[in-house]
Image 1 (cartoon, one colour):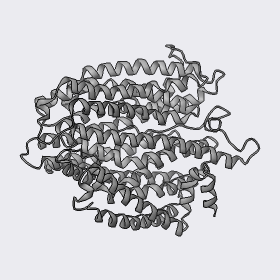
Image 2 (cartoon, one colour):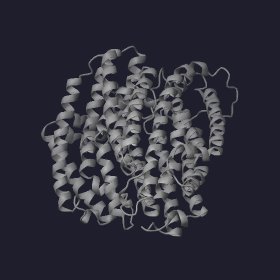
Image 3 (tube, one colour):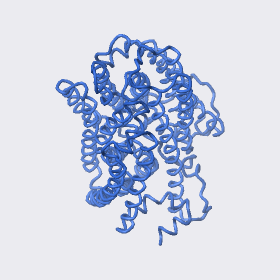
Amino acid sequence: MSTEGSTRPVPAQDGTPGLEESVHDDGGPGGDPVEADARQNSRAYALMASGTTVSRVLGFVRTALLAVAIGSVTPIADIFEKANVIPTIIFMLVAGGVFNVVLVPQLIKASNNEDRGSEYTSKLITLTVVFMAAAAALLTLLAGPIIGLLTVGWTPPMLALATAFAYWSLPQIFFYGVYSVVGQVLNAHGRFGWFMWAPVVNNVVQIGVIGTYIGLFGAFRAGDDQLAAWTPAQTALLAGGSTFGIALQAIVLFWPLRTSGLRIRPNFRWRGMGLTHVGKIAAWTLASMMVGNLASLLYSRIASEATAAREQLESGAGAVAGEYALNTSQLITVLPHSIFALSLATVLFNQLTRAFHDHRAGDIPALVSRGLRTTAVPIVFASVAIVVLAGPLGRLFGGTSENGAAAGAAIGQLLVLTALGLPFKSIHFFLIRVFYAQEDTKTPMLIQTAIAVVGLIAAFTMSAVVPPTEIVVGIALLYGATNVLSAVIAHVLVVRRHGDYEVGRVADAYIRIGWMAVLSGVAGAIVLALLGGYNRGFAFSGLLPALVSLALAGTVMAVVYLLLLRAARVEELGEFLGPLSRRIPDLSRRRRG
């Protein structure tokens, strides 16, 4: 799981330093303000998207290396994944919604003060450090009971190792809190790039840690008794290195904070911060985050059944996906969402909030329509591409052991199931920004609760009737289904409140773009079939062949897709390429031509 779904900044108001002042307009004063705003928005979008892209690519490298080090469908992989993911979910459960949704408007209001919000920001950072340090310390002490609650059928050695990993990992909660609040301070003052680029530092550190692990302890080999041979030094290096990366991710943000002009000092005078007002707003947000992340923890608990069941098999264990494989499939699937939907929604969220603030509710439908149609260009293609290329994609994260091909196939199966719901995930994400821009946190909570209830009922039902070795496949399918349901519910509520957001035009765009994505997928599938991508031939024979197969088939798909869009004169392509074309003059001329 990740914090990628968190809400991003609202716009600056009344001359405060925000997006417009943080990204300089090359056109200078006196230019067209609409065009200037478009250029500024596109630069912020490009900066955020590039940071997310680099971070995610490095995350892929880190995940692929980890599979080489400890396997991907192995007990150690699932145990480490369990302990390393819990801090993220617990942070979002305890405070993530407050940091990411509620505090930015308060920071922007405070920035109207004579000190540009320095005093308020100092109080907020001080409060964060104290609260998150206490929470992290308490939860670390409870590592054993937490692991026990979130696993099913694990043996005492598995539980002991998971607890040891958790002692090293749970302090990450503190650093996630610091990273979030300092990052949102920077966002509120228009310095968007740092928040998106800081995770790059974390991934670089973790890649170095895993590389060191492989150098010291060697790569995973099928048939090894991992649990019996595991040492405390291996635990300290993997889990301690992971926490060190998260710590640096937070620490690097203090440099741009120091140069932002804000005078930040420890300030314990929390009375008068308006926390009562914030609390009223945060109540619904916190409830929403609690519901969503409690659901995530319960899904994680159900998925742990596969790890225990796999250890009882005499043969075929290498093809049984567990929690590591499930989260890896999510990591891959969420990449296009993080690069395109999240980054675009971050910038357009400013416009939505500004429209509500200026009492221009009539502008909301057009903004929503444009955002959804523009997002369709990359997201629909990405969904088809993941389905077509699922086999070699999974093989990249299957490791180098003898069961690497089987592990890759298991991950590929999960990719197909999760990718089917990707467009709906992005649609829901964008529609839900409408409510947050209106400072309505109750409606998202109700949506989240409905989805969580339906999803958990389905998950526990599957747990009772589906074999434990297949439970992760069922959860992957459930993820896709709940994405569809959440998009439908959000659509109904947005239309009810703000009217038709050109739904017919949006649906037409998705259908037209969808057909072109499918045709490009057929071309890619032909290439991949020739490379043995569907019969465990060349594309499954190793990490490098998988990468080569992905590059060849993926390039063919992308070229065919762009040619089809251009031939059909799809206007959304121009909207999508806008941020690039405004930065690259030649590309801009080609667009106009």
